[in-house]
Length: 280
Image (tube, rainbow, N blue to C red; front, side, top):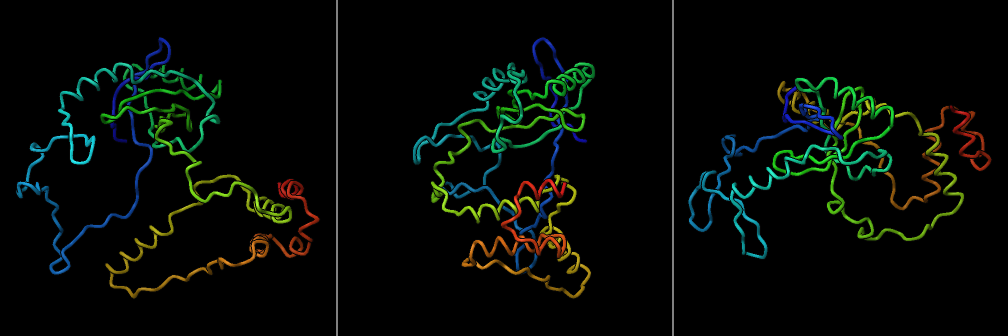
């Protein structure tokens, strides 16, 4: 597994030399842009519209647009001083919290941590301590010139670092438009919806889910490559937007019932909790 960063993580006086590895990968199907006439890959050039010439990377500088058309140029030397100051403090675990206290909206990317030379015992110590206390560590770290807030936790006997957003990077839910402020549902609708949730409730097994769209795209590409006749997949019926809510809920329940005997029992006589216990 490729090492993308080397450093150390500390808590208290314990220092752990570690390596960082990407825990996830993007498997989207990548496409190239070609000239329709000759199928030649398109080149994207960096051109200055004022000088009307193509420029190289060493002629490009970074700048912050503080107002429309006004910029402040920041040199590499300016960043070097800031990064050195942050890096000296970046890997210390500053707090330990329960992971249930962190809403999933804060999580960003996942990385595996492996011990570097001389770090096996300290790595094992932190792992065991997190397992015993059922806590996760909150730390700050610099990755690719960006200061990140991170969670360090245990996943399948391996330390994992999850970068998380800072609070000011998470938009306020109250700013979302058209969210109803009060419940406009009946008790019967709620009971039926809970029953449907009970019938569809199960343990989470990630291997049962797969990217059907990506598979369809790859099949399309392979069929075109081999010259096979293309077929159109069957389409599922789309719900009618004007369908009565209760009718939609009841239809969903009927589709999820395991057998006819269950289907014949009146919905209103079945309490959601009783249904869940019976299935367990």
